[in-house]
Length: 248
Ligand SMILES: [Zn+2]
Picture 1 (cartoon, rainbow, N blue to C red):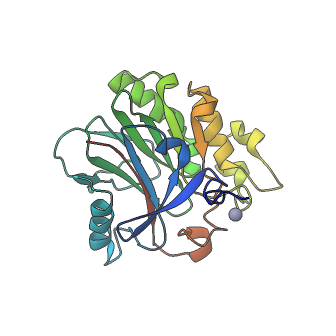
Picture 2 (cartoon, rainbow, N blue to C red):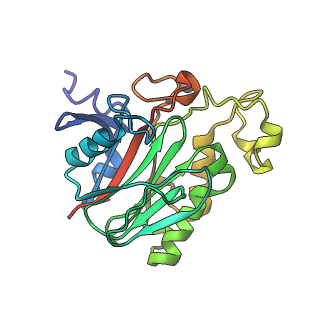
Picture 3 (cartoon, helix red, strand yellow):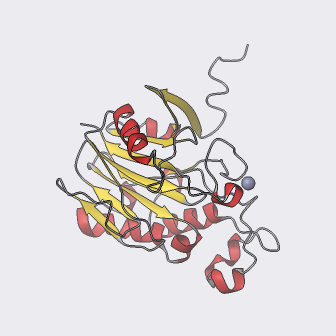
């Protein structure tokens, strides 16, 4: 007889309704005490430009029971901001957030780009990185690991990592790849013009010292999966988001 939870555990992520907000969560991260995370859906648009963004961000914060939700102006770079006290960050240009403060939700907004969660809950340190192809090409996943090591003294092999739903290899077409992607991307070329960005991210994380068994990927392509916003599919500014926080 099939287990009632069979479908729930069919993939690396499960759907969760918290309050009135729909999320996806990584089973691998849910198993870690002290950590809270969620990936929102196209149910709510988190884009800063949208008129509904303010209320939707508040709705997200409230559903997760967070004291604060912080985000930055993402510019496809590799700058990472450490969140310590009460600073307000939306004006800061950066593509990564890190903290050792409980109750602070680190939000990355996305539509095909990855959010890469790095977490050492046993050490009370987390990060959330924005990495599209530009971020990946610039080494953002590895830079995140390095940042946590230098700033908080967290060794790479103490980290867990999760790569959010994002552009899948199925839809990762880069017609100008010769100009846009670095040579080290060659092993992740899966078709004439297609690349597996998730594999490139995993490779970077492993090369930076994260244990392979502690890296979780979503198995979800945002272009194929209508539950998420996709810039490539919709050509709009709408964004879903990935949040990670340390429990209080
Ligand atoms: Zn796809």
